[in-house]
Length: 276
View: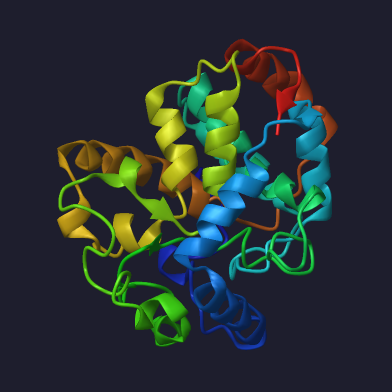
């Protein structure tokens, strides 16, 4: 993996890099302002319908048209980030299922195909689609990117939602929390609903929580966690090195990569369509 690195690890996730700062910061302002508890419930009801059949590789091709506006490290179509992550794992001999997770971990961003500007799930408005996620229904921690935006959320002025525990019970565990709506939870639920899915539990956890930085990197939400979440964190940290540190200017040919990765995808997800 070292041969594809173009900058030091400390240079990744730098949210004060001149030209990109304004766009990324505005994305997070919208995300923090508009992602309320009620919004998240509404998005789950609207988008978790599993009634749009699309093959995995078609979804991969669709990400050629999407650039993640929240990412300060990469200004390439999102599919290139997926290929870089998967190839980083492949180069280090990681299990084939983990390579697959690297390849598909952001495929939930395909939600933009039927998303809307109003929901923040479109190509133009991505605040309900991409970015670091946080828990809704309780106080936002200072470990969030641009914590100065926390107070802009209406829930932070509602006594039901602005305490450390909020609507949750102490020790309830990550799986019982509602995170900000985005591509992680969407893809997790799509894969969970997919009858042919045999991706191991570790891989499903990687899909679901890889953008939950206030927890796995920021150390927040300790009162909500349970023992199982410690195992989750180990899996996420393992995955995270390939999610972050493989980002580089290298461009892969999607069709050339298909010959290697499609058989792995069919091994764990079958050959039929996935219902989005």
